[in-house]
Amino acid sequence: MAAIWSSKGTDWELLSPTGFPDEATLHTLVEQAPRLLPLAGAPDLVVVGREVQLGSGYADLIAVERDGRIVVIEVKLAKNAEARRAVVSQVLAYAAYLHGTDIETLETDVLKGHLKKRSLTKLADAFATTDQEGSFDAQAFAANLRQNLQGGRFRLVIVLDSAPDELVRLAGYLEVVAEKLVIDLVTVSAYEVGGSKIIVPQRVEAERRTEEASATSASSSPAKGVTTDGADAFDAAIERAKPEERAQLKKLVEWARGLEEERVVELQTYVGKLERWILLPWLQRDHAGLVSLWNDGGAAIQFWRSMFQKRAPDFIAPVEAKTKIKIGQGNTVRVFDDELLALLADAYRVAAKGATKVLGDESAVSKG
Image (cartoon, rainbow, N blue to C red; front, side):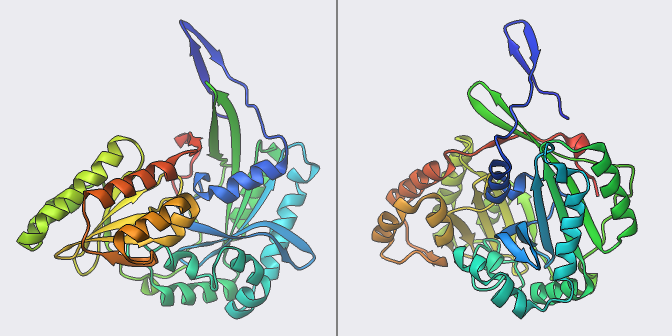
């Protein structure tokens, strides 16, 4: 367990975890913020179902990775007797049920109601509708998903407030002998510090190999662009744009950096295969933003309706009134002014409120 110390003047005090009142609280935390889990390989994943019936049982959470691997997540408190051995049997039973399932059955039978609740029709929609980088390959995703289902390649994640030694040894042994499975054992501790809730997630390692079974082959991996932190790459590429567009592109960079200075967003620049630069003002807890900023020779603002609905729904109507367009999933405007940018900045500030602080112990995170 990570050690959290608090200072009161010259004295330092070792804090004790406040814990979680029940499993449902930890369950909801993981569902709302799966990115806080320090999983092997740091996969990009989206939760697509809660309490999903798989055979005679119900999986706490089902997620899917961007590369087409299904993730089964079980949440337990250490005081639950099932946290020692039974939870391993549960996740294996769910994996066995999913093994050999075809995509159509998974989407139209097993997950149909769960996808509908999340405004999704297919599993690929979990990434396609928020593909702010323009790098998602739906065909490669479907091919990998089908191969993983048929081959029984899954990620099994067990989340607890504290991991019993018996479970640590069992999970470690299982990953050694089950080469098609990636198994993550994660503890999440909660603390109260100065009126704020601090979450400390750790990946628990037994004495086991750190290599994980690959869900995709190199031949099936889609070509990707390059992502860099910050706005420098986007800023530097402005000189490649049309001269009449450069002032607007500079305005977009200044706007985004202003939100970064306020700690409302974190900025990343994506350069695609066709040398289109995309500046991504991402909300930290979502790893996505309300808009993406484009330089494809000209300046453009791209909107993401699902993020507005999720984080700033009251701003949909004002933005639509200002732009004279209906905000969709990836539609753009090329004409904008300071008033629109101010409105979008306010939307981001509202969207960023209420983020949970998360601390990670790097020594507990797998380097695999």
